[in-house]
Length: 312
Image (cartoon, rainbow, N blue to C red; front, side, top):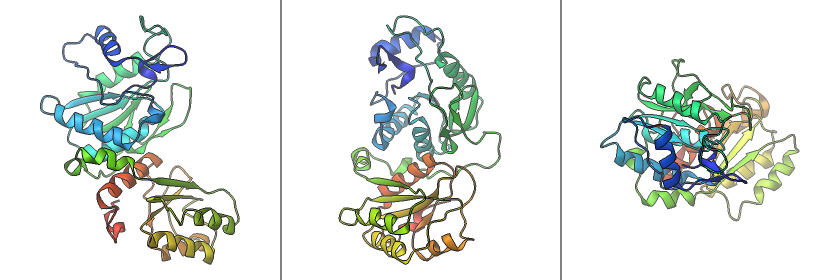
């Protein structure tokens, strides 16, 4: 799908797909491995949910002949792609998403990059793909994780991701969206506006002013990145503003800036949020939250009681 793995030149730019696949086939000449270009190949920071739906529909067609897939993806949104694929495919196939911090080829595209982690990451994914249970996974730097659990934690280090190990018995539920997806959903998904409001220590009246600025043209989905276990300043004005946004049809989802742990309303500063018809995210990862929110909105965005579709 592009990304650093298949980039060449200065600045780094995705290599033309036919040329790169020819080089890839030369480096990995195994007879049991076939290579395909994704529908859209570009830097992963410019990809979105529509691209991952298009990729999923392509993979679904390939399932006539294949059951094991490795997706080479840029690292900027690799964990978002993995979470989306998890919620689309569930356990229908064996799929690993991987990438690299350095390109497979040196800057001219004629020979392998001498210090790249791309070779090792793809070899590791190839070694794992026939032994993992059916499902979607993220693999990087000799580690393999549950796809919807991952965070990118470093911009340069080879150990760029962490997540829930596949050895842990608890697995993240999948929305199993594949039967509901069609070609028209690619563009529909791109029209969904999601606002991720990251709270910092701030007076509640300032938060109210920020959120009121969206009342005339509210986002389809508002994610509130709260403190701790899901706490925000206790303010009647803030509660009223959030209710107004909910009344417009905006989905309001409460999450936390803290990377791990459950949400709760045990503190007075957060208990008031339970009085609003919003959703408390199960908090597997921010990528999981994004995938879950956008895919559910795609199918149930106009439903009045949308909260019932938020599965845990």
